Image (cartoon, rainbow, N blue to C red; front, side, top):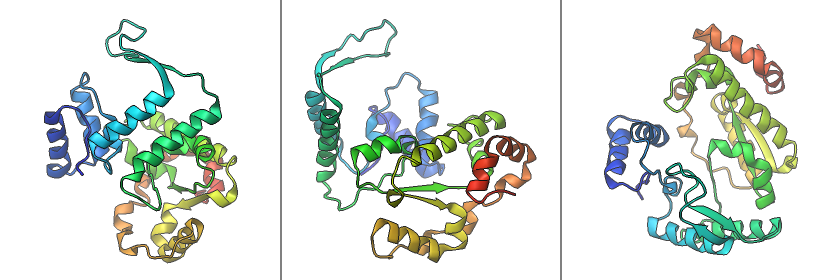
Length: 259
């Protein structure tokens, strides 16, 4: 299915063109069009490319009907588009709310009938404690990379600050918070993998991942590309290294990146 980023078909076509003709990634193209069309309502369907739009809408409506007691279409503030509509939830305890979330996700994925559900949204790293509470059998694979190389890559993207120091602070905040949250997850459920190890020690690293997930090691090693990994890309910019070292010196030592 084609990924849907907006409710406007014309914007979706532009989104497709940016990806196919200019080689942009989906998220990058989506961000570009959001900047150019700030009043265009983005669609949550952008995350659901495995589901058709009608089925996704159906699951969402069922979920909201279970969760929400009243919907005020006028919202609670005057600013156009802010907190509109406003949802008033039913009086549910945490266990009941979590149960409804599970039902929604199970229904959503039931159509394709997957035996395993994999999600690679980077920001999920900031919610691993909640996700573990939601699904106690969930396995987390935290892929890390030399943070200087991360900053070097991110500052060139339209969706991230181009200022080196600000970018380094955001990367640092995410890595340190994820490291802290990971302590709340049983060791059998959380595995940190260095991208550099995946590239330079592919067979051993992939075998470790397979054993952790509990599947046969039938992964396609050919997709691992040393050139595409851009290891050491930050070496050409000492400003990035200085900014990262000042914020993540301890983290780098703990993860084998100390220089």
